[in-house]
Amino acid sequence: MGLAAWRDAVLRVLRRAAGDGGDGDDRGGRDDRGGRDDRGLSTIEVVILAPVMILFILVLVAFGQLVDGRGALDGAARDAARAGSIQKDHATAISEAKKAADADLSDVCSGPVSVVQTSAGFEPDTIFTVEVSCQVRGLAMLGLDVPTTLKSSFSSPLDPFRRTT
Image 1 (spheres, rainbow, N blue to C red):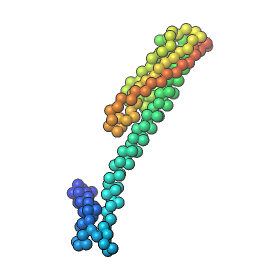
Image 2: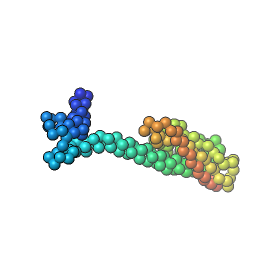
Image 3: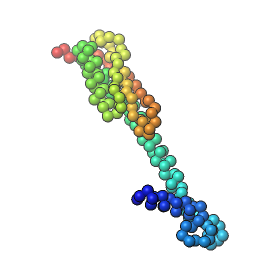
Image 4: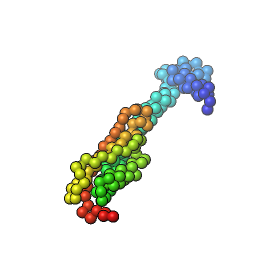
């Protein structure tokens, strides 16, 4: 449908809603009982309400992405802590934790994934804790540039039977 045809259709709907039949009807917008004619009113309601309903659905989808991002971030923190806790040395532990988090969050985050060790040291019989954070798309799909950085933390005990090779 071309722009001119769309414009003509909208004008016809508006004329009918205003009471002008637009088709040679000389009743002046009145029905046979003398009351106002409501032809075209539901069309106007749809034209007004459709964008509002679409926006509402998009907001629901955006908040759903935020909830999904939170769950994915929690899982990535768990996987990163576990991947780091089974390594032989501290440098390898951080590297493997970052790899695990990146693999889990590749389709969730819109920017880089940050993995930071928040526990002290890497000694036997201690806890290896990491904090994973990234920026989730969420409301950006609606054109709202609201920075949505989510963080999640998880701890895993250092495995007493860690890799020794």
